[in-house]
Image (cartoon, rainbow, N blue to C red; front, side, top):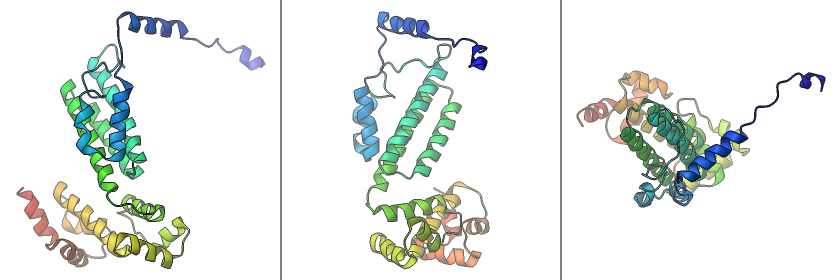
Length: 253
């Protein structure tokens, strides 16, 4: 108590906030109708990508009053508002079943991209892209409903696709015996645990072959294939062509 007596009085902003509220009322400044925001977030949460156009013109990326988060810089204000929007959309997508790590990684990506934009139209276009991206991913994630146990396994595999994943690891996480978990996974997914991991690694390899210049040998090594010949064998088994043929095909598209 003696120490607290020496502290400076807490500065209160009640007067400033009261004036700000009065200014907004006097100038008839209203924010976007919360009703439209709720509808938009519901569409994201439920993966209703076909319905997005119904609300985008009236939602947080529409022309309605969005609020002011920077009085000195209109561009900065809109960037701040859209960053807030990304946070809301990210959490709606997670509630809709999107893998948390995927959702947060996308959030980081889009926020970084928002910071790079230099025009209001570019910011709004990027925001619409983010909304469609999240909604599409939720829609895809919910095409097949799995049990909580299988969903946990799938999310773990997605998050650790570059690591060595074992059935024993997942059985410890799910508190189930390896045999029971393996049987449950195959029953729900339709393929074995090891086959599913191979498919996911090949899907990831396809992205790396398309969007990076990594050598094919490095891609196989990154994705935990024991050697290049085995990587090529598995890749061809799943896609019908070799990694080199796949890369050459997409270079010319």
